[in-house]
Image 1 (cartoon, rainbow, N blue to C red):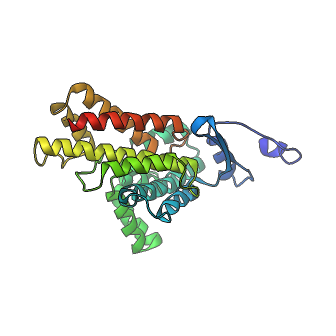
Image 2: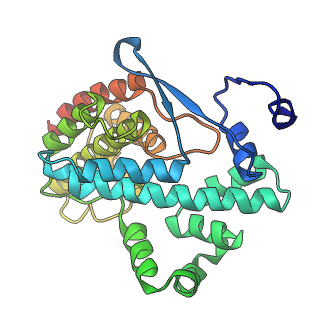
Image 3: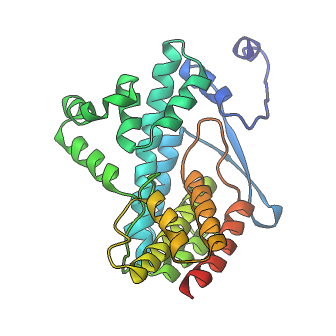
Length: 289
């Protein structure tokens, strides 16, 4: 209906729901989308946006092209953004497949939320069935060749944007990762989108928290840090006060959500990420002692 009305008049719709944009793009109807984001001091930025895959790749390239950032930016944040770009591509493909078969958006979101591993999201996009994750590698090789398989494998093994995996103790500086988050929040990477900078900041903050948790566990019992993220957060209760462990788990979950692209949700705001940054400071100090 909006498309028909738009043939002879200009129509402006304000919404926080990206399904309207997808309704146009999936039917190959012309639409121009502007994103309004709020930054520090209630400043507002308006930008014409492309598809989320191109945006995520552009954000990763902007960080890769910026020299002088802390080393953890390139070793931890950048790979996480690359993985998010691939996740976006798989999510877009899954949405399109599901839409064309007449499935409901609600059912799709439930299926995606239940796909805990990167390979399961890929399987849902390729086959419409997350349980076929073991077939992803061969299907990618058949469609795109061996280099694509290698790339997917690297992303599947990289934990920075994953849901259940938490990195082990690393020589990367926690302070450097916090500095990276500050610089991303401060808008230093002008070529990156606002949403991309905020997601990158979430990745840096979550990685800093993961490293601190791993070091606390390793100091308490050598080898204890070599387990999954959820297990580490449970084990943390045995070595730090219960309230500190609870706050660490809650913050890790919030940052994990902030890292990802969600079909029906806006990304984290400046105020949210800044509040998480403050909370990280408090937790890092508590986990040191």
